[in-house]
Length: 87
Length: 72
Image 1 (cartoon, helix red, strand yellow):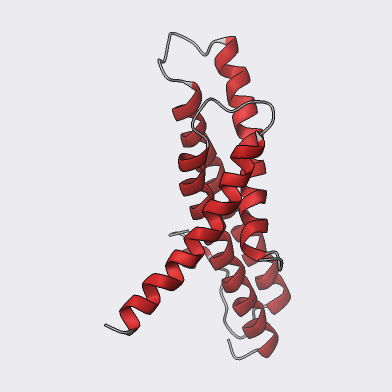
Image 2 (image 1 turned 60 degrees about the horizontal axis):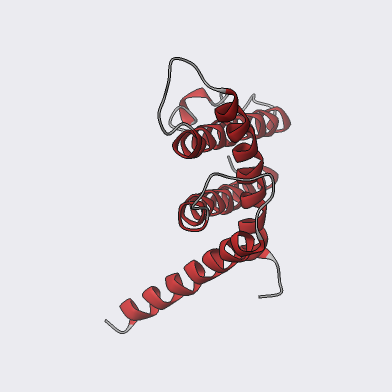
C-alpha cells in the first residue's frame, strides 16, 4: 500500500467526496486482494511444491487448488475466532 | 478533509484495515503452526480446532505481554 497516498485523487476543494470515497474503497479492495494473493501463493508453494520440477505436476496442481481453498477457509476460522462474541 | 462524512469514512476504513491486517497475520502464523501436512480436501477437526485455539491464545498472549510491560 506504499503507492496509496501518491495515487489518491486530488482532495482539494473541488473534489467530490463521494467519488474520493469510492476510489479509496476500490484501491483498498485491490490492495487487500493483492496481499492475500501473495500470501496464499507463498504458503501453498511452500506446502505443495517441495521439489520444483520442469513443470507443475498434476498432483502439485491439485494440492495447490486444495491449499488455496483451505487457506481461505482458515482465514474465515481465524476471523470468527477473533471477532465472534462467544469467547 | 474537514468533511465529517469523509472523516467517519476514513476512520471506518482504518479500523477495517487494522482488523484485516490482524486476521491476515494470525492466519499466516496459525497456518504454519496448525497445518503441518499437505492440505486435504477438508480440514480435520484437529486442524480447525488448532486454528481457533491458536488465534484466541495469540490474543490472550498479547494481553499478557501488554500487562507485563504495564508493571514494568
